[in-house]
Image 1 (spheres, helix red, strand yellow):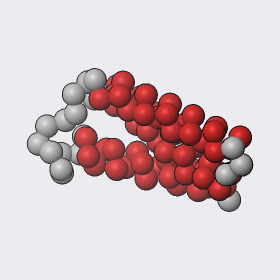
Image 2 (cartoon, rainbow, N blue to C red):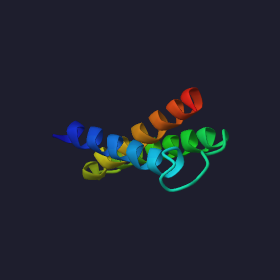
Image 3 (spheres, rainbow, N blue to C red):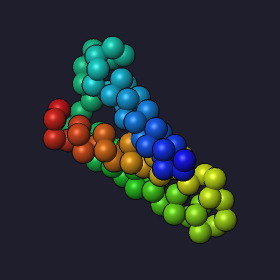
Length: 83
C-alpha cells in the first residue's frame, strides 16, 4: 500500500509537470532547457525530505515525498532527453 501511494504520487507529479511545462495547454512555448536541472535538484530535496521523515519518526509522510521525488526526477530526465 505504501509504495502504491508513492507510485501514484509520482505519476500525478509527472502529469502536472508535463501539463505545466510541455503540453502547450497552459503556455504557448515549452520550458527552457535549464528547467531540467532545477527540477532534478528539487527532486533531490524531496528525496532528502523522505529520508529525514523516515529517520525522524514520521513514516506516514515518506510515500508522498518519495513519490514527489521520483516524479520530479523522472520528469526532469524525460524533459532533458526528449524535449
